Amino acid sequence: MTVVSFCVETGTISYDNCCYPQVATRASTAARLVALSVRLEQTSQQGKTKFMTMRTSLPTTTRNKRRILPLLLCFVLVGCASAMATPSYNKRVALVTGANKGIGKEIVRLLSEEEDDEWIILLGSRDPGRGEAAVKELLAANNSNQKIICCPLDLTDPKSIQTAQELVEKVGEGTLDVLINNAAICFNDPTLYGKMEYTPFEQQADITIKTNFFGTVQVTQAMLPFLQKSNYPARIINIASSAGRLAQLQKSPSMTKTFTSPNLQFSQLESIMNDFVQSVQEGTHASKGFPNTCYGMSKCGLIAWTRLLARDYPELSISSVDPGYCATDQNNHQGVIPAERGAVTPVLLATLPSEKARNCSGKHFFQEQEIVW
Ligand SMILES: NC(=O)c1ccc[n+]([C@@H]2O[C@H](COP(=O)([O-])OP(=O)(O)OC[C@H]3O[C@@H](n4cnc5c(N)ncnc54)[C@H](OP(=O)(O)O)[C@@H]3O)[C@@H](O)[C@H]2O)c1
Image 1 (cartoon, rainbow, N blue to C red):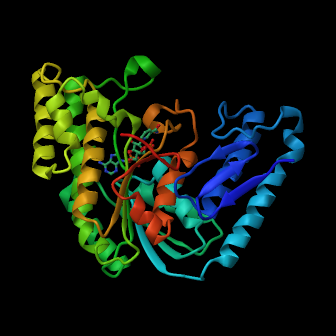
Image 2: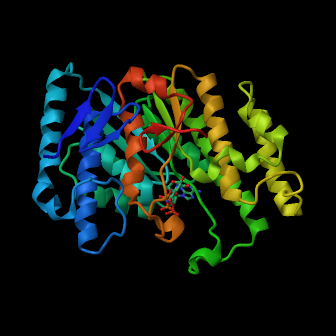
Image 3: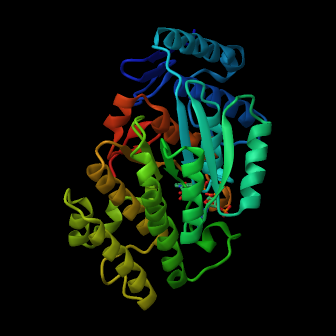
């Protein structure tokens, strides 16, 4: 018999003989992961998806008969957990940047399925038309009463950030509970996929760092006064990447030391990121020990900044997430897991109970677990 158990205390999911030691999860996340794995298995049998995110450990011949059992058990567990929990129903406001498609859109969708609180979700989109279309699509597919509102927001345009700030202030009445910094750009190696437009490396640096690093910083700074008014505690979740790993700075021990220093200042980070852009444009970045990737450098800076921000704002819960290699436009849909899977951990961090959320601050996550940077 297949047994799915979820321990509310330890946040551990046991699924068949496999144990998933999620550091801090919720019953709804456990149900979500099991439902997703079952759905992926179904689509893979129809030949639509090549990969699964979770193994069921069931022999293929018995899978079909037993597919429904984990789901039923999970629903029972979710029911028991909610019955035991103290009832609480609060109004929460969230902003997700770059949410008109890909992982961001899935984050909005999963948040809109939340049942514990009343959510108003601002779906950030640099193109208002694409944003409105995503809102329409999500609302049409959703039976919940959660609100989804389009928030035009271009990370590289200060006027747009100001307009978004005004909208967030109005909608949230001066308070923002969750900011998920998801929007980013990535220029791909054209030899890898053969379908991407080619952009010379020296032209990638400025726009990549301006969008992924400085744009994210500026949006966050604009939203911080509202986040500080939340008693949730407010969460900032920065979507990073495995490309942002610290190891890429290994040719420069001094840079590694600065990035990991507990006393790192934003001015130091700012100056390194600007130096990277200039060095790439001058063709000297490699000799200075910078990595050969603009996207990687932008995400490495983002993770360092997440730690710095968590240190400076201990009353907030601020973390970074590597969503995994998801099939989205960013990689010409070469990713091996669906965007929905990449959205699970950001949503978990956005919805964890206060104490657990506080424990996650300053940490970097991948698939519900803290990982080494
Ligand atoms: N997919 C993966 O395998 C993977 C792996 C690791 C990390 N990530 C990270 O996950 C996040 C989401 O990526 P994704 O795969 O979902 O990519 P995606 O499908 O390309 O979506 C990126 C989103 O960011 C928006 N965006 C780009 N530049 C912007 C700007 N200047 N202002 C506002 N929005 C902007 C895009 O808007 P438009 O539609 O207007 O272009 C889009 O909504 C990114 O931070 C990415 O780096 C992805």
